[in-house]
Length: 412
Image (cartoon, rainbow, N blue to C red; front, side):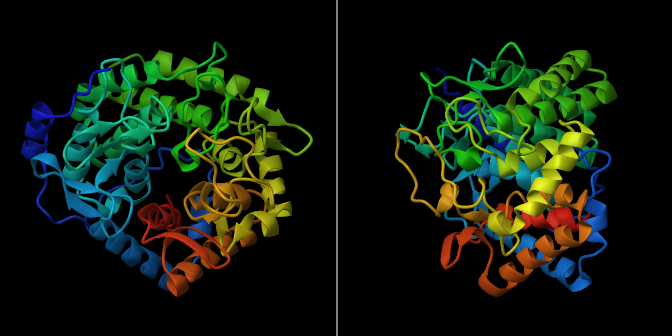
């Protein structure tokens, strides 16, 4: 493995780093990730103007508070709004750009993209994060005790991040510049012949970072849906910028959509998280598949119906657990498990509100509005945290919990 992290990266970052102004810029927005029939705008129209103003201000505060100086003078956005994390995480920053990019300085977004791409390995693997010293780390865990060789999701999140940035800025020249690196990253992703992202039980890699402690194996739902979404967006911008191979991205997305039903639980009307270890209903992943258009209309409606039927068991104060009520994960990464009811093993998160609420709105707009309003009310009362469960709170001032709600009430 080659770690490309030092002098060349720092020079690029120094040239492109933006002034310390951070947030508050107005930029046009397009809904790159949502399917054309997303119900997000209908939700926004029913949220009170006071709540919208509050979550916007709170998101600006979180984004501003998350900024620390990295190598070469780069202003990096860390996962928490008080700058305790000393690195720029790919997936967290992608959510910030996708759902709150209009509150970010586009120069800082571009500089951060190059900072992360500077850590891409020779085999195409995108890092999990790059720390403030410019050192790339490829998997969750500590820098000296990572859970695996790499995480499977960062390649897709990197492509999605660039596409979200280009949606904001129409920087076609930049897309052409980095498209080969993004293609190399997507080519690196471990997939089965059927197109789905695959994780071997015998050579375990980390998968979606918001379940990075969990040992899902076989065909993976969430990472496959991420790959589908990344390919859709890459196809769109390759056609607009006249570069790359848009037909290849189109074919890869179509193959995933064709074969995702390998993970379909027809009895419940939901998808399994994986089909070997952790063959369990995936609340977040099923809703995301519906929201980005990776399902049939019938499947999307059944997913919405399941979420509505089981709402009281999977939602607390508008925030959502990964699994059905009372259920815990069946396998964990070698680093150890997570106590039931805590963190990724049963707590309730704000992150997936951005795609769970619009999925519910397919069948029950009132309930979707209630979900979002309740989450904002909880944020206003108890603060914005990573996840909750009763009196349990984890990671205060968690940026993505704010951005992903803001993006929804902005109407995507």
